[in-house]
Image (cartoon, rainbow, N blue to C red; front, side, top):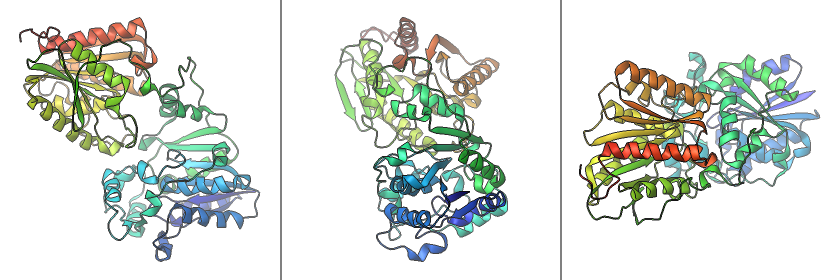
Length: 511
């Protein structure tokens, strides 16, 4: 006999699991949908001290009352935090942890860090307001918390009607783990309409920081469901089948990368592939200006990182060897190299990142060391979606756009990205500056598909695009493939960008 303990996410109660629980019981299992203290019908039970430990204790009482020898703990969204805390305290009772469309949090991590809605994070940072409670989304606002694709209208109406405020401390206090939960078999249920997929996991294992290699561990398994973030409402029968398969140890195992993993350092902290000299650097708010050896106003190249980036990541992108290298390289060739920290902490943050970029460019153009009529923007990876605004309404001073291994349309399932951020639709619609596109030959398929779609659209509309190929390069090839081929590609791309800026390689050059 297997017993499933089903733990809901923020603002909800055990009622969201009713259909899944019914199907599990029909198949002969036990199912225990849990409503945590202060949630659902237990809203009035919360007090000033209600936090993650309160919810962990809720689950421990459920676990201790179950006689079945095999317990599968299932967490959705915020619910995964108390699931891990309870498993950490009762590892001998837990046969498997199942994460439903939710990244596994780490020890000392608060749930607020992974909230998909930036406005909610701001309200929590401001003290949550409303007496220590975080209000649920307004009607129509639920997609900001995860795709509602597939949820029937009646179920969505019920979700909006029954949602209750979340005790703020449950989101702001960090998770405390001692280690046993990390050794338990774990299954990830990935909802492709919300942007999760096995392909994405494989990309993180191959190209991401070393911590993601744990996803290729023997204890990890994965399933995909072709629905949004609420499969218990949109696909309860399919989810119940997946939970049964997960309990049996089935699922896809992600293979460890076939190529050498390289130094045991996060990829973004690996050294830049070119040996470039240090140059004077000025810091102004979110930007740094790397200055060439001349007092005359010079053109500028603004380097725009991808993401999402955790809000507490240190060093921030502009202080990594990667962006420091690019900024110094531009300055060494006579341009002002500008590096930027923008606030893309989740898929819903593209508008905020776009605002940060626009503000940064305005500040750069006003700087006395910058020729404000000669600006280039250079985007990396998922930052490529930010090119859409500049392609749709290019200002006359924007002389060039560059994009390295970019996403040029939202990746499959990225429903949380606003429709405006689709460079494949914007290219060629308003004339605009030439584009230098640096393409990795061993790119991840999801990224490569958007690049090909972009090139097709550019060809149809007559947009000027120069492609710089790195045939043997992977995503982030400057860091993971520091080869002569990669160095030559970076040098060629930089020369092309500076040529569009007008003889930038010579500090005394003319326009």
